[in-house]
Amino acid sequence: EVQLVESGGGLVQAGGSLRLSCAASGFTFDDYAIGWFRQAPGKERERVSCINSIDSNTYYADSVQGRFTITRDNAKNMVYLQMNNLKPEDTAVYYCAVPKIRNFCFTSTRAFGSWGQGTQVIVSS
Image 1 (cartoon, helix red, strand yellow):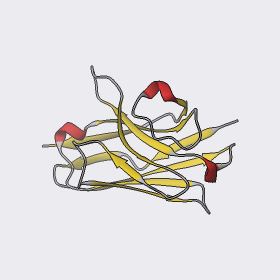
Image 2: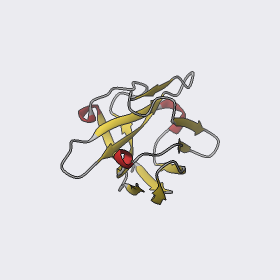
Image 3: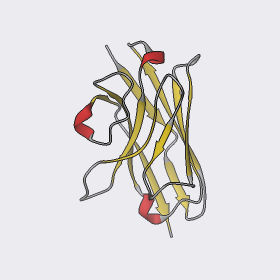
Image 4: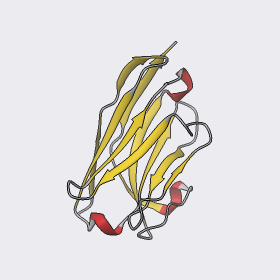
């Protein structure tokens, strides 16, 4: 059974930083891309970033480019999202997810089949 557990969320002032972690189990981690998504109140869930498995290519939403960094540690089955210079508009529940097709960093939520429970990030102004 695929399990994804996010952690690291919290309350931070604008301009601050947080590091989110995603602990994965129940599948061959090395074979899969991992995506980070977020969902703010009243908004659709959107992909923030993604990292594939073979060459660790990374992808970012325009809104976080240059501020967020995604990395993975295949030895620990972990994916991280370092978030710097946080803005109030980054406030959301953040989720990590595994795609249905192993190593594809799709942007659509429908392409991802397994999700964590989410971790709340609140950025105060």
